Image 1 (cartoon, rainbow, N blue to C red):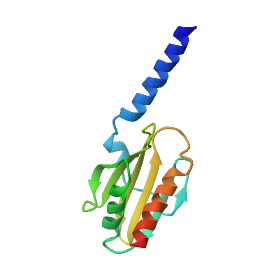
Image 2: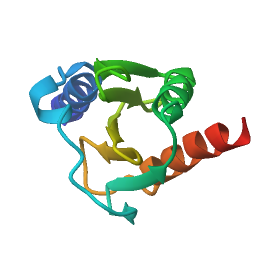
Image 3: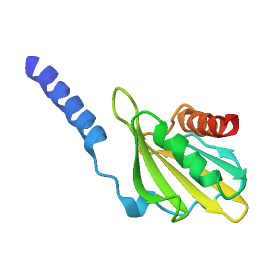
Image 4: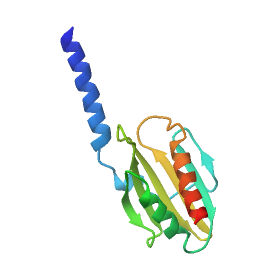
Length: 135
């Protein structure tokens, strides 16, 4: 019976390590944002903002200031940048892409593992937008 508990603990540890250290496929996550309107899904959120030429740089500054967030690929100058934000305890990765559009910026946040993010991506996008609008 004891070996079953150890086996289950080992499997749980392996899953936790995979979630935290699994590599991110840049070609898969750093893609164009195809959505044309605000939307909230089970594991994703889209926000479309109208704004001037400095909007992308302001959003980038706020994204980079988020805890446990790093740039996966791209840059504001290139017109698209994708970030990875990891949850505090388990390190679950969420991906956020900002993409410049002729009249503003599209923001797309989505989870990698699971089905539902419990609104985390929508809240993150709304928080970043709120910070940009407050400045």
